[in-house]
Amino acid sequence: MRGLLAPPEAPISRSRAERFDDLVRDEARRLEQRWSQELAGVEFAVEEVPLVEPWADGADPVPLGRLVSAEDGRPPRIVVYRRPVEARGGDDERDRARIIRDVVVEKVADLLGLSPESIDPTYDSPDE
Image (cartoon, rainbow, N blue to C red; front, side):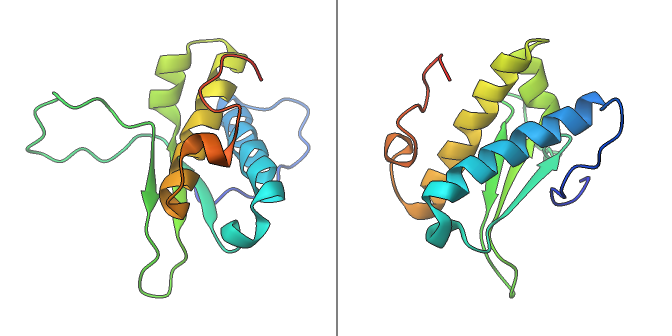
């Protein structure tokens, strides 16, 4: 894991991974504006790939994200997996942004026990 999303620095050119982090950070901020109390303390992070259990047979689709429940004094964490999202979104940054939006909305909905559409009316729509 590259760690929790920190504010971006201002280099002249950003790597693909840094641009991905920016997309996740932007989506987290967008949802935090509407759900500030409910998302207070929730951490958002990016990991390259999900851990695969050695006994997994590959029949299940590769997850694009996950919700890590709060435990042992740690707050809940929403993780987005960069490589699977990039594989699904291809080279189109708008497609990646839409997938990230949907993954983060789904995980916030899981956390709050609500439907994704109630978290964000644009959920699962092709347009921003």
